[in-house]
Image (cartoon, rainbow, N blue to C red; front, side, top):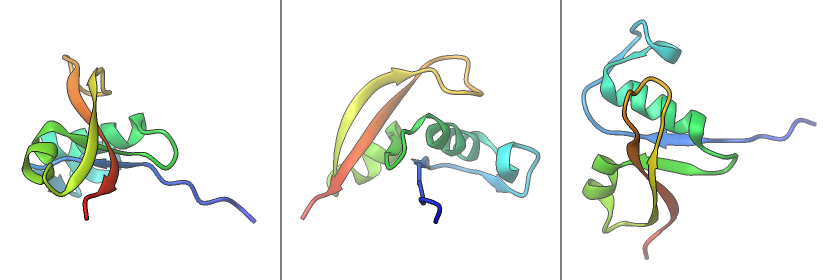
Length: 86
């Protein structure tokens, strides 16, 4: 009877899985992905600028500006994925 809620954060780069960071991720990409997921609203997919540059032709995404993410000293550019392009 419980509702399933998802929040996604996607980042690209080097990461160590099973490390000391949140949920076992270490390295910028892992920490950034977790921070993006934590900042996402239910049902939302947030991506980093590097993911947007790499996949922007495949996605309908809107810039949300720079957000202060947990674990980062400076605000970072964040994009909201609305849909896959056909």
